[in-house]
Amino acid sequence: MIEILKKYYKIDIKDYQKYKDGIIFQIDGINYLFTKCYFNKDYIDNLYQICNNFKQLKLHDFVFNKDKQLISEEYILFKINVLIDNITLEDIIKFNSIDCNMYKNNYISMQTFWENKIDYLEIQISELSDNPLINKSFDYYIGIAEILIQYLKKHPLNIDLCLSHKGLHSINSLEFYNPLYLSFDLKYKDLATYIRQTNDYNLLFKIIDNRVDDNNYNYFFVRMIFPFDYFDIISDMVIDLEEEKILVNMLNNIEEYEKYIGEIQDIFGIYLFPWLKKSN
Image 1 (cartoon, helix red, strand yellow):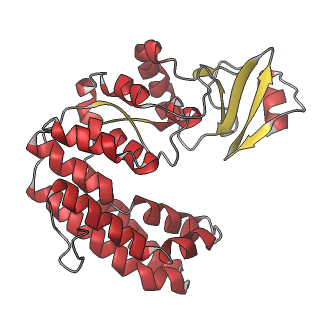
Image 2 (cartoon, helix red, strand yellow):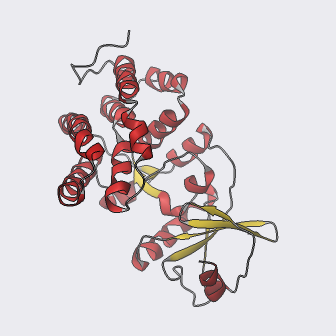
Image 3 (tube, helix red, strand yellow):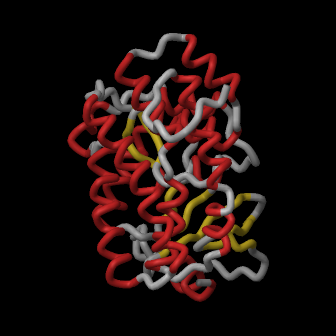
């Protein structure tokens, strides 16, 4: 990776910090992120043009290489404009306030996306997995996911898109302001992620008290309890052969997850899982 940076950007560094599939380093007081890019050239070129419309957000800036290209041997360089530990509700609202309905043609509904992803995982697991942890737990989480997907299908959404994020595993500025994580979605996607990661139940009650319209209310509820983390973990284990410690920890805490579902059902007044007792 360091040699690629030197070859395409004439940047020679010795001090850097590893971050996921890349590194963070500093030159003349400016922070940079050099990271693996899993998208093709057309996608990145289009994303660059889109991000030019959102200059007010201080997204990480794309850096062109010596060949005036954005991708260098499957890596991409960003200048970091925002580097803070924690994203706040104000950051979420700032993104939510940007109208992205002009990109509706690119929108894939949550139910369609997850039906396709689950179908794909079922094939991968049947062909590749001999892991007993996955084989014993998959049907349980599939059952929860399918109930939630069917619920969304019965309650069509009012598609009003804003600037959102995909695949956020932590609410930090490196990911939140990284163009590679941007998507166009309903505003309650990021809000649900934020509340789940911060456990800010006061915010949850406040949003509900503001009378979320029925369609968004149902979507918000589903995003609050959908087992995203489980499917992300097994995707890594099946496809990338990641260690299974995280899955072991998750399965050891199924009772906590069910308790959480019960609490969210009570808050929203929506009960889809009859085998779970009410939390109160």
